[in-house]
Image 1: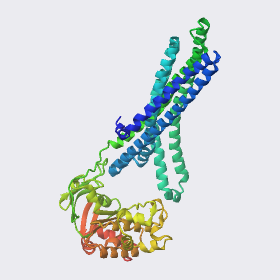
Image 2 (image 1 turned 135 degrees about the vertical axis):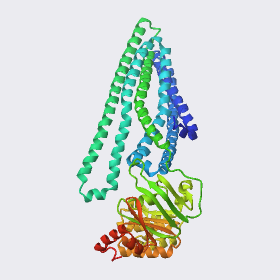
Image 3 (image 1 turned 180 degrees about the horizontal axis):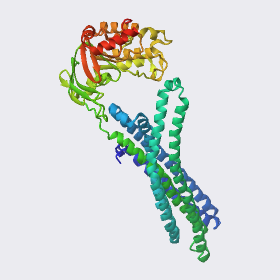
Image 4 (image 1 turned 120 degrees about the vertical axis):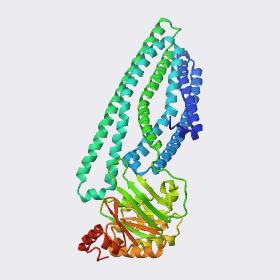
Length: 576
């Protein structure tokens, strides 16, 4: 019922579907009576004219009934598909608004299942609800009325058959309903394994883990199959039970009708018995259809709960109302940070740092020291746990989120490219950019040379996740995309790790020459990458232990000297 609002824009289709279905059912209920008339008055009465006339009427009604059925299917399809489209759009928009911690909680595999399988199941339910529920209800009620009109004694058969069907249906549906949520969770697991292996195919092959991953998938797949079979076994019992009830009911109708024909010839005729058999079949088929649809109802209920869980999740990172024209200063004041769910492990401790506009600052530290966590706070991928982060003296939580992020570009550790052309990937940074701006951004990122050597140059195809490019090429395209955005703050999160020192040096030289006034924050582990920065902030186990220029830190910071000495032995610093 919480999702019913998505049907309101399509109320016309939703109303026309049952109306046209009522027309079809009404005609279906009239046909057995007309057939009875043909048998009793036409065939047995030797009235050929009546047979022809009634037969033509039946053909005309069947044609009209067919049109009603087609109309009902068309209206139902328009309503259910439009409903699912709007629901999917809203669910996807909600997913886009969720913070990293919330998407991690749901897991990628589960979100994919919810956006596809779950919404499809709800769509099927809407289609059934608009058509088949109405048909089943009308057919059962109308059939009972028409059957009792033929002879009240036929009600005895209905009084016995219908409760048996209802009891069987309630028992089986009651037992199978809880299993459908389990089935969806098992499907989440299968999708997660598939997603992980598709995205990590190179690692799997490099470590020759195909057999292990195949076995892991088999376990998840077998688990899903076993749970699904449990449900299907329960539902499989229902069909034979209902068929037995139907056949026994038909025999009972024939017996009662035969008794009536023999005892009082004028009270019951052969055609009426034939009509009664048709009606009891229609009635019990309607109930059978309801029982079969109960599977769709229970699955849709489980899916609706999962979709509502997304729609009702409030975004943890909420936008503020303040807007700024530019980012002139970034200030961390006594910042503590821990990842949600890991309150006992603080990633940043009482950190204080001020970054001025146009400054070229580096964040240096060992793996796991908190460098990425620090810069993730600036665009509010996460919020500080204690203390405050201020932009131009305003707490970042008071700023309009879109305005804030529109002024920041980030080149992340893991390069994310999309299937399309080189142009479309770079233009992600600025949809309205001219071609000469794209070329300029590629030139700064040291990507122009390899792009122009591609067969189709800037219209060259980039496979999903950049699979057709090398690691260094992907990083340079990502950097070009960030540069094209023309941000106030440009963040490099260890995003030049796949570049050789010579290429990286050229990139930085062009960057600082052509993007004057842009604040550049570089996260790195190699001193060679950052030794020419204005300032270098050294992070050690979540603490800011030193800050200054390369020369100053060599004199004052033991941690920095240790990093420098270890890299000097490898020749990294000297080769810069």
